[in-house]
Image (cartoon, rainbow, N blue to C red; front, side, top):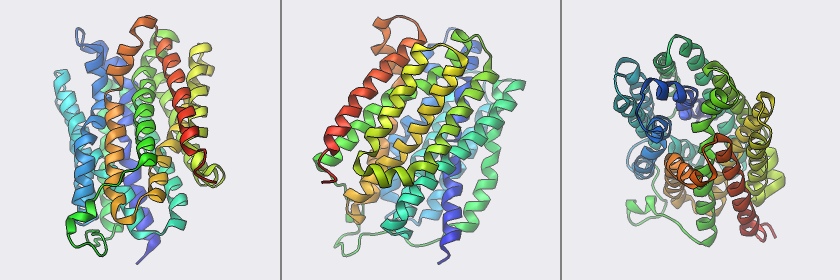
Length: 385
């Protein structure tokens, strides 16, 4: 078994996982074209993939017990390709854009648990921390590539941004060559194959679920409001919004590169430390309304996002049995992506009393992340003793 080849295949999947981030910089432009459409509905163009994750992720965990992972991977990538290109050709209403996001969401739901499934099946625990770090790096690099190309294409109009998803064709080719066909991963020693999809839960895992859910509910406020902040508060254009998203993603790349080292030192408190960094990023964007400060805040938020995103699956991999890991992680990912999907609804509702300013949303998020950071510290206080 060629481990290097498998790693290349897995990283190719990571590179497309957050490709829909390319849509974040054009949300404000879409809203400007579809006048009269509710702001939350426009923001759902970006967050709908996370909502569909709720369905796709648990199904992916189950499917891995019956279908080889390579087949699931190629299906997922096809969803990204079709869903990404659909709105370029059909974009006369906001509902058509949402159809494209829906199809992308199906692909996202199946793909992300699959990445963790490949790592758990083909690599032992000693290799997982570095691979989780590489996962974060290539996820961020892929997102950066899609954001950059999408941003350049947006100069011709926001619908051209969707052409960036044509890159998925090359990723499908790499995955087809490098990923092993393998066999469906069933639990060893199970009397019934269905036990391979067993769900594991205890108070610690529940704590990880709650912290992850709340974090994703509020953190997505940055992605759905960054372009409006750039345009309405800083007085810049969509190209600058794209640059902010790129800086956010570069932070994610560096966060991914740091993951293995931070996980070794922080151990179970890795999420606690990461939440502190993210909170600082949000507070900077509120208290210092300038382009440079927004760049700095964007970087810290992206840096923390990459580490937190990898940390959840990493901690679960050490606190679940091998035969329950795939389905437990898929449920966790479904839950946090549900949180990301309802983010506009929750954040807009919770910050309504604070006034109309976009900065107020970032202040609210910073406060909430600080609170769950304390919760994370308490949850893990005795874990490493």
